[in-house]
Length: 179
Ligand SMILES: Cc1ncc(COP(=O)(O)O)c(C=O)c1O
Image 1 (tube, rainbow, N blue to C red):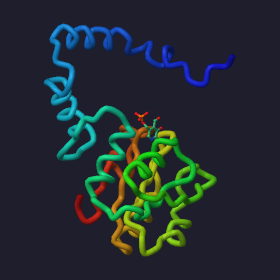
Image 2: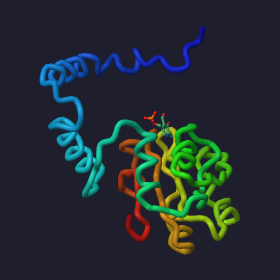
Image 3: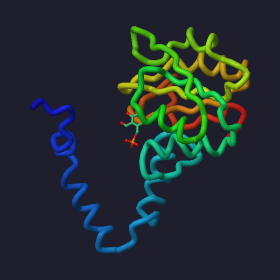
Image 4: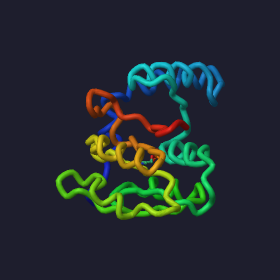
């Protein structure tokens, strides 16, 4: 069998750090929120260069929560790349919204900005970009389209923590007009 993703190998480098951290909080008995999460939120916000960071359980939840917070009418449309991990689409559906797929740019495999406008309808409320393989999307064009049609932007950065675009690190949610 060819392993699709050998996580034991990926995690080898961090293994001892993980074990030490796990033992510390296991002994403390405080498993939800707590000091470690608060510290992580502070450090990650500083690293990304944002005012706020909110720790959640996983990437899927991180996508669902802002989509729900915007309180769009059920069935509103969210533009999203057709080439992404399944969680991006699941989050939109779970929030009661409709994903509208846009094909990728064949040079980067990220969303093709020139194919976004033709998918915008009266029901479109947001664009969900996904920075795949650590590569930032062309945010300048995408932000321009969002501002022209008054759309929110949410960035799925699950594959791009620390990646930069125009000297700014990617962040999960851009409130184009405010969250
Ligand atoms: C692009 C993308 N979005 C979302 C997710 C979901 O993250 P999680 O598995 O933590 O829910 C992943 C996970 O690999 C991903 O690659």
